[in-house]
Length: 211
Image (tube, rainbow, N blue to C red; front, side):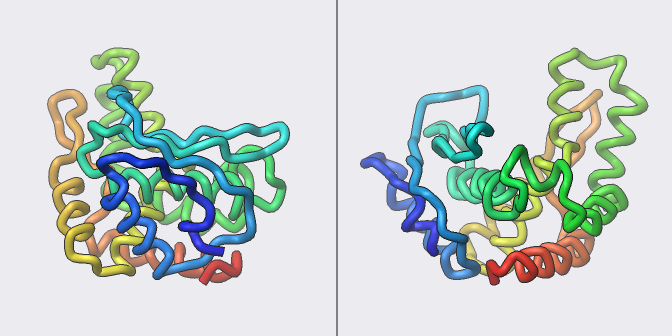
């Protein structure tokens, strides 16, 4: 099954841009059979995008992309990563695979050992008490397995596709980073750091029958 057959997109000025991201994903891997659900563009400002879901029974409700998103294509691929984590890579179909599936153990280790994640974790440990509650919560969330997976999946798609515009956006995203305690941390990996993660994602997607 392809992503274009899963997402129901309404008319929006971002339609062509988002359809291009869908086309890129469909050129890389397949999806297990699942129900269709909406891809909507909204005016939310707090988040670049959101994956909405239910757990009882487990189902996807919609992917929401902000029309204010800096990189809407990368945001869509990121949210598709959450969808995969929730329904496609999760044999129990409850909560998310990154919460409990042993298949993610190699990635958990690689994430923890990567320079980017270690730097962000060190900032949180050393300077967390000096920052606002909201800032601490945001950084803790960025370091959760669910979020690390979604960012890994997005970078994996971009790297595998070699699509020039997406590659440029990924470089800009990596370079921009995020400020915490007056120090910069990035939430995407440089090419060398990502190589072992890339290989682990390859193996995970292949074992799930999606490659």
